[in-house]
Length: 157
Image (cartoon, rainbow, N blue to C red; front, side):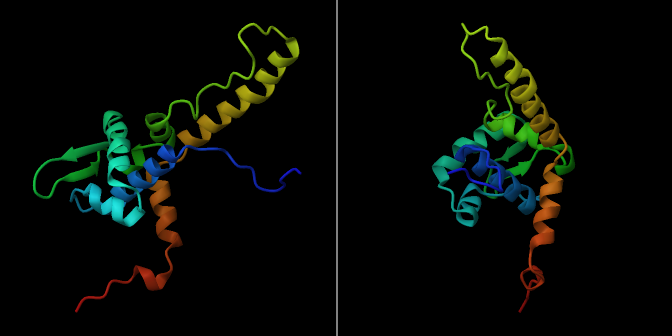
């Protein structure tokens, strides 16, 4: 039975958790304070060990910076408006937006080459362009606009 309606792309847990962690860091470090791994872990329900592996990849891609010391943690390395989802996804798993090779190395089939050129290459190019056009800032703004008004108020006693 064919599923109709919504198209689903399979994304690894590493990519999904990395995106969530980066958004969390961006949201909670806007005032300049570093965000602790344990805080992200608690808020997003991601194990600390797994999160540390993901943060290494984001740090090596210069998307976040580590801050040492008592109030250490991570901050976003550049303004959120200058970080694209293409960069984020490539940092976490280069194969997601990479070229699709649907045929075998020995296969010189004209039909498979046509499908490769007309379908897979076009889809990959679209995904790259789409992800290059969405920034971390876009995601932060979308998230904030989705928060119900009663959750956005902070009460002080």
